[in-house]
Picture 1 (spheres, rainbow, N blue to C red):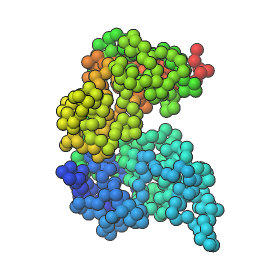
Picture 2: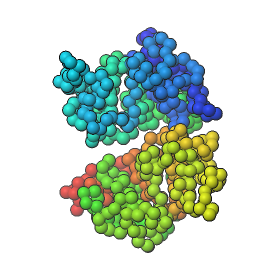
Picture 3: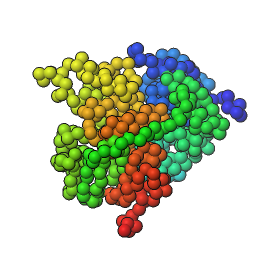
Picture 4: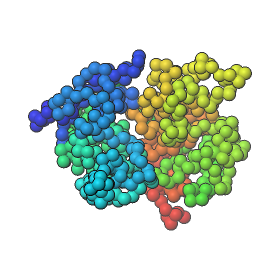
Length: 504
């Protein structure tokens, strides 16, 4: 019961789900009340996504109770879940890009006029009314192609409201949003709460949980741990429940001797993207590229590695020019790139852990042009063990793993090449607090072994906690080179918002 004595609108009690020998949920429980925003948090692999997929009808539970408005329910399909008033808003919505905003909202249930013809005027007016209700401004006639992730999420929310959904689940909705977009989404969420909707908010960003949510439920290792009013708990207590231990040092940076220059970038230019970019990275040094979203940080890193071409400038590794536009030449020279989007650019989700880890070194470990699964597993095992990849078998597919383990597999793949320069873009995006500490500790260990590290991060605490130097990028230019002992939120943000007119 809630504090006011009202029963929960949604109850999941001791839910269990296994995939063969792998138990994804041992005892998942969640109780959500109308007119509240309920956070669901836990490390990657805690069982949050599996619980949501059972609620959405994508998976069938093996055991446990699922009740909606006090009635036992069992969803065999996603259509049954939607019909019962449950909507899931995913991190990356899947709209039909060639259709308009209003056509996406009313797909398959368009209002009709005489002769069973689609009433486009009614569809437009109803879409506009949904957006007015949500307090946002979107053109119902605009094509979905080219819309931001934030706008796509708003469309999915509008669709859910048009279906009269009473329970909305937001699964990592802010991972790809800017600060302004996050504030707009929170405004919409609070408005829905005030209308009496029940919202479940899943996020690794605990500051957002404490800003937005009324209640927080913690899961760990596939089981329920605790539920508390947000006002009666702290970030530290939530973290302790999430990881089963106190994370005292999220940024375990240890001093490392800085050696010779490994990477030299001089005068790198790409029209309308970045301009006159020059910097060095030395052995044992972690250099962060910081700045606002869209400043050109990832584009610089991709150009250095050869994924994208550049118009002018030079890239040298250990004093030798690296040909532009050739990732193969970069790898052979000793570079490695862990991309921001691990699922699309770093991981083959339908391939095994062993195949992913050995993807770049297959020619090296093959014998007479042949590569067996057994040889792949033997080559991958040390790297998987070194990064503590939590998987029961090296033949498990990447698609079945948590986000944190997927990130570890991508890092292991590139460490298997034994690079002297590691470029890592958003190393902890979308992973839980415990795994973040593990990744940070790994980066510090690699620097201690003399590897030069170029880290791109949008999280200012991560930049300040891990970098020996911070290169701030604004409008495609490096506006500041700040040593660790001088790096503060103020100095970094001042340089990140600098414009060309502010530069000497």
